[in-house]
Image 1 (cartoon, one colour):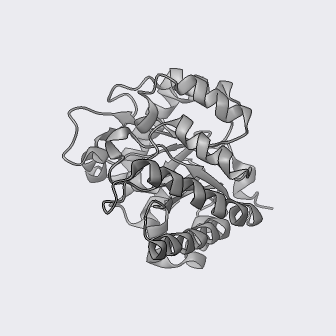
Image 2 (cartoon, rainbow, N blue to C red):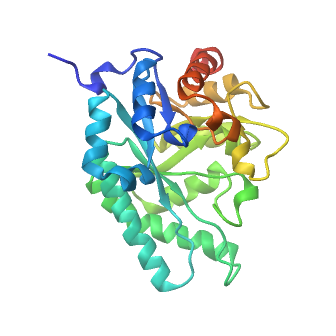
Amino acid sequence: MTPSPSERLGAGTPRLSLNRWTFRTTPLQEFLEVTAANGIDAVGLWRQDVAEVGLEALRRRVDDAGLRVSSLCRGGFLTAAAEADRTAALEDNHRAIDEAAALGAATLVLVVGGVDREDKDLIGARSRVTEAVTALAPYAEERGVTLSIEPLHPMFAADRAVVSTLDQALDIAEASGSPAAGVVVDTYHVWWDPCLERAIQRAAASDRLFSYQVCDWNLPLAAEPLHSRGYMGDGYIDFPSITAMIKEAGYTGDIEVEIFNEDVWATPADDSAKTIAERFTQLVLPSA
């Protein structure tokens, strides 16, 4: 009898998951095949993949490749001031939760949204995120899905995320009162935070550390700063130290490599997967 994908956790490169956006320009089926061919067990998918092939077809493709889904990205964008926009955002996030459940994804990543240009009220925007997560968490809990609030580097506060630190994300998760609300630690966004270790310990104490994503911080910054994410070891992030913090917190789940980089996207997928596995084995796994 063939074991299920979950029973094969640890085959190949243990705990490594490839995020779909690391292979953004690679056709979906090729991405899944390359992942499996390199002995990697899990993938982080995006809702664009659902839109491309359909939810049931995507689940079949993942299963046929012998893979698991470590996360689905992304829900969120919860900061709009207009009531109609807030209602639409909640409806879209309900759909995202349903998609995550159908894919067997461990968690739905929430990028909470930037400042509403109509009012420029940063404090109000954060308050609306708290209200929305509180409203969504029971729905997620019913469907066996966790919500991973992702703090983004402060330079993205205007357009992508008014939550910039792990502590801010935890404030929102804890205010929800639901065990389904937690956080994702993405090294690109939080490596600079002088309170990071304490915040990771705080997440562990409340069982709200749901996902760990890694990539490096490259310089010079690209014209689109999000595209300055790089292979581990190419930039400035101390992966052994941060990963040791994550281990100390008791996290034993998948570790996703999520890279947005024009040069990486131009690299043949198999070559990129091999580079990622090598860097992961050298810089991340020994401390995990």
